[in-house]
Image 1 (cartoon, rainbow, N blue to C red):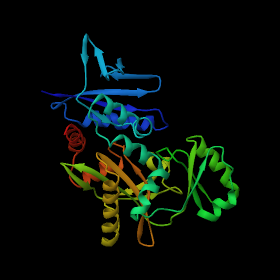
Image 2: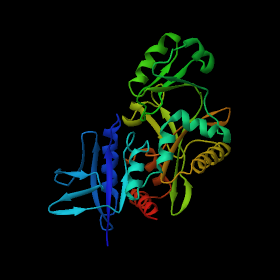
Image 3: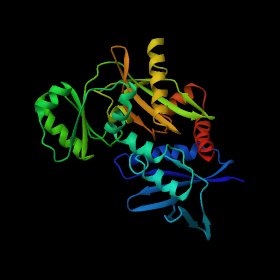
Image 4: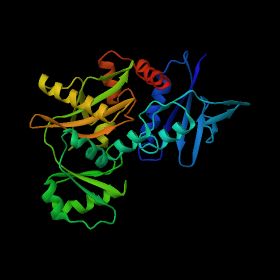
Length: 324
């Protein structure tokens, strides 16, 4: 009997448009002979099932079911394609855990932890995972520009602590630019992280659970046409994403080991994509994404394709792992 699979997409953050694209690629790629597929749009003002005629049917949040055309549908598994809140920060994971519905991303705690950049880095540092120098500021704190620059130096990056897709991030070259960058970051989150600039090769490493085993995918090198890997570089083609990355064998071995270690330390499951910059030959972790982009142009699907895993296999495997 075919399983009913809900593909959740949208979300409450600035990333909702990217999530809708990701969710639609998952919907088009999964094997419809094997699964009954349902596109579910999750927004602050509505949770709805959207059929192929673009008709909307409300979700009953009591049991995450839909009533359409005179019948009620419940789900065997949820494919999570929501970038940002509430799909990447633990809220949906906790909701489905309470309802006992399997879902394809990591657990609630792992999602909440990795979505909070500074907490995630703090947990990993005792294990020897190298990171940039960082300085934390909460909304309402007194801003001591001299203390910030003394800690992280210039140039530096000012980032929203809990945001993705490079929303709320600015590269700062001069002390005079710091205040404006902080205001930009606070538009996305009430916590910010200010990090030292790491000058080196930037790479993205996908790690997944594939057929029961932790698998590190081929590494992607990020060469941005812009000052850094910002929104335009990520989504508007203003970067080169080179898979496999142009690394030495030693660099490749080091970053693969660290990426797998991060996945296992955090007790991850499902998808992850972590970003690193090489400084003095050592990979320094920037962040961990647990609901990476799923479009054909996105990094993790590119990496899977490079190792001979089709999108249908990649997404189908995630469902089968969740159903275990």
